[in-house]
Length: 459
Image (cartoon, rainbow, N blue to C red; front, side, top):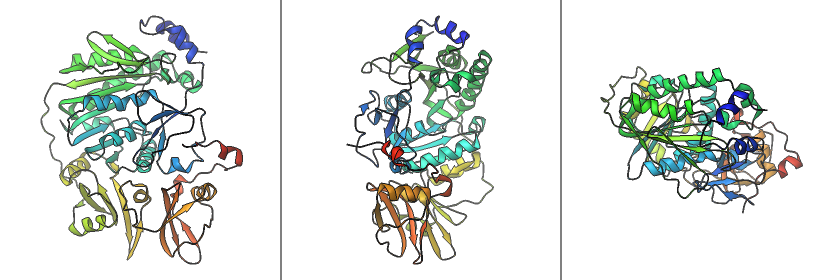
């Protein structure tokens, strides 16, 4: 079932029990989710908490996420449990740090970015980047669902961050890898080869070198993969420390059973091996930067950016509970931006920003069209628009963009909710009710009774 070259290699890795690992890789991956505590406080029925993540929960069975309105509302994110340890690492290495500037360099589809967004809260902001355009769009959608508003999403090659010298306090590089930790999936096995592991290792070096200049002196780079391959894991960390002025940072794992501490030539990494932990394969290590970068040069953006117009700030306060770091008015769209105006101008000069924070509304002639982004925001004022509670069946009709009716909607704009959580926008124009759920988000799965039974139940 597994490649012979892979089997031979793991037999030589002293910290891996190859028989236990291979047996565990033939079992199904555990299903797990991470809750968005800013929107949702209940826990799944029959669930067990992920030891290293207070908001992470193992599920008894893998549910239908597509047919769960709470998934579309951003109440939780289906995330592999081992990767949730990233949040614990960030918490350990950033105590006392204020106004954090964090970069998630290889962020799609968004599991770690939404986690970082929750950890940062109002103490700084996150830049979540993805180089592949279509995956960057998926990343932006997941950030929108999460709704915290402290994140910019960019679509750039890692090399384009090198101009932001000494800018970020924390950089996460969840590097593209050979995927051995996902060998429970036959696709991952089929894509594996020795030549691909070598290609991944070279690409990881390039990404690390591209990211390094944008990390400030004393900042930390968190490096992770979902493979067991030393050439992509501890050897990469050792190479970076040999190449740059940096040191390995120790993470405390004493309270978590099953995590393997890897010591390799004075650097430390942390391995998650199926059979020892409940989750997929994962590696993570922390590097502290000891060298100083010259500040980034300011490059004037050729596009005129209307930031912080007084009237626009007043308009934002009519919709949001929190005061934004900056306000952007672009192409008749109003945005609450999570970074100060000067920072935003600099970032926009270097990067292709595809999500600018929270979109509030679009102005079309004299009409104001509220944004779906606004409705999913945790900062939206509670009574800014009339709201209407939907049943599960009605919510699924809304998510499918089917015609639906529910009680009496007042004329004009309204927010529909499911289980008390904002789901989207409708507008009663008298003759009909217009459904403003994003067309590209529309679900196509048929909500038959058996499938609906397989959504998460909450306690």
